[in-house]
Image 1 (cartoon, protein in one colour):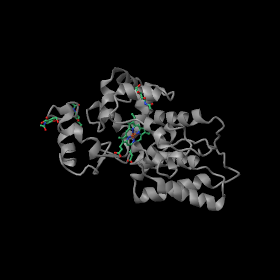
Image 2 (cartoon, rainbow, N blue to C red):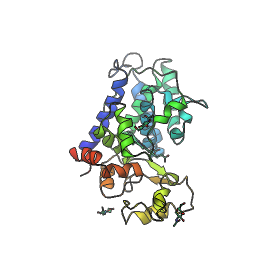
Image 3 (tube, protein in one colour):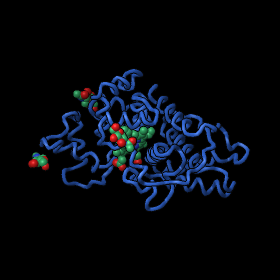
Image 4 (cartoon, rainbow, N blue to C red):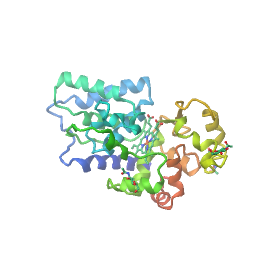
Length: 281
Ligand code: HEM
Ligand SMILES: *[C@@H]1O[C@H](CO)[C@@H](O)[C@H](O)[C@H]1NC(C)=O
Ligand SMILES: *[C@@H]1O[C@H](CO)[C@@H](O)[C@H](O)[C@H]1NC(C)=O
Ligand SMILES: *[C@@H]1O[C@H](CO)[C@@H](O)[C@H](O)[C@H]1NC(C)=O
């Protein structure tokens, strides 16, 4: 369970490091119902589709990784962050919009979208039977959102060395990297992002040899050689909607779905970083 709490802690620290004047219950007098509205809104979408939780958590991560947790990922526009390549698959915007409209009706111009997103991600993890945590609020929404800035979001094709560098540029160490990627215990990817591992990996004519031999035929059945690239694939093969620790066991057993997830086991530093707190055990 330790790994889970670290995910939470690191998200919390990421949020804090950006703005230092946040406090728990920032809206307790100016808009006392704000947190409850976010909670009930996330709950109602979650009841219809539990996979939305993963969408909200990833949305929060992609917001925070570019210019801090300032809501800039939510801004519409052809050259905004939202339209950058790594963000095209983001989902859950409608949940934030819905909560924002209800809150605006009650207390116009008070609660930031950035806070609504940070709260929604917390509630989404909690509803997925993960841990809960208190979210300090008082973020101000950014006014700048540019797709070129979103190019620093991690790619599943980057080496571990690049991931480590890109996270350390944000003050996050190897252990933070491994822990945060543990968020892939919920949610999904798509055949187009993993098929290259399944058939002709690095043009050898074979699959990526690090894929578990019993898992490989399952992935190949899900993603045939010339099949639909937009077909969803769970990131955690056994419990896609539970925020548990099975992601780390999967990676240990060669059952990581994204190449970048599986490589964390091969790299000495991230292997050890995971091991230090038994994430991989
Ligand atoms: C090395 C760092 C990371 C890489 C390379 C990475 C890459 C990816 C990719 C490729 C997907 C699938 C996208 C798709 O198929 O549409 C994904 C999904 C996801 N990522 Fe990450 N990610 C990283 C770190 C993180 C972190 C730090 C978090 C949150 C704390 C996170 C949360 C998620 C979630 C929840 C999903 C599922 C989204 C859904 O179901 O809609 N990821 N990630
Ligand atoms: C990520 O790290 C790589 C390798 O150090 C570097 O070339 C790249 O610019 C970094 N990406 C960003 C935009 O942070
Ligand atoms: C794998 O890819 C290489 C390079 O594109 C190609 O020459 C080769 O025929 C492919 N092998 C298989 C088995 O598809
Ligand atoms: C392959 O995955 C299964 C669980 O799905 C696990 O029991 C087994 O140990 C894994 N094999 C290897 C070589 O890690």
